[in-house]
Amino acid sequence: MRALLLLALAALLSLLFAASPAGAHGMRTAYLEIVEGAPGVAVATFRSTVADPLASPRFPGGCAVTPAEDASSPYTRSFVLQCDGPLAGRELGVDGLGPILSEAVVRVALHSGEGASAILTPERPDLTIHGRRSALATLGAYVELGVVHIAEGPDHLLFLLALVLYLRRARAIFAAETAFTVSHTLSYSATALGLVRVSSAAAEACIALSLVLLAGEVARRREAPPRAITGAASALIFGLVHGLGFAGGLSEIGVPDGAAAVALAGFAVGVELGQVAFLIVALLAVHGLSRLVEPARLGLAGGYAIGAAGAFWLTQRLWLCFA
Image (cartoon, rainbow, N blue to C red; front, side, top):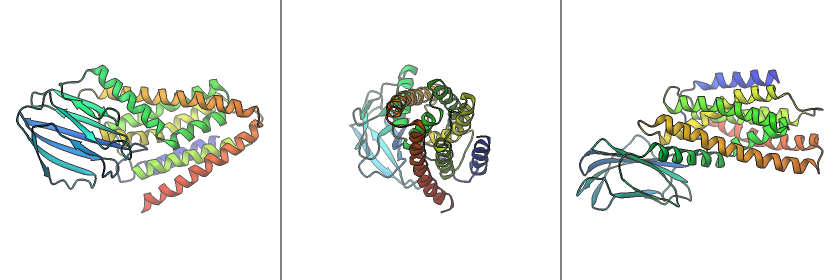
């Protein structure tokens, strides 16, 4: 297991400082920012992590909208708004969410110095601009985003499943999950705040590599599961890599000015809730299957399946590193 950890750390160090910036990991998010320079006059920027011809911003009524040139990204559009009065109290939204883009983060900076932010979904695609959002509302919005991110990350979920098959015992599994949470929270917070910049393709390749390495350990036949400290140590190292993937999504959607700590804490809580919920379901499922299949055979089958998925993603993502 020590060789596995050293190999993982070497992979992280060799790929960490590649040239391109971090990108989204499993997040299909739109981002709408509106800055009111004078009462009723604003500049709007709408961008997304993937191309989506269906999603588009819906600006407040009573505003003349003029498209503006923006060559910063193929997924970015800019607009100039000329409204018949201040933006405060008006309603805006993002149409077309759901089929491709799963949510939209909206941030509005008013001329008065106040602001508003919200995470819009297909079920709640509208925002009324009432001024500065409470810390509790911001916390709740980012908790939701963290849960959604976990649900939409199959490679992350497979890593958690591999931990269940590898460690087998609930106490050891949740100790590893705690270490995993601590390390990925540190790495995604540092990256989302701009303290660290890494290659998106390299981070995604390292995540796939973590699956391959852990799947190899799962598939090995052994009389008893490894010690809890061994599982926690491996999860601590691999969590740094997975956190870089989380950071890509947060870098794209941003965190509210003056509420970065609240937003990051909310996202961490959402990720933790999603992880714990998945681990409980996975533990129950593996416990049920172990009554029908010998644990060693179950680990062998699960290790090969997870390893195959990780190897496919690793090949695909390494190609992007050098394309």
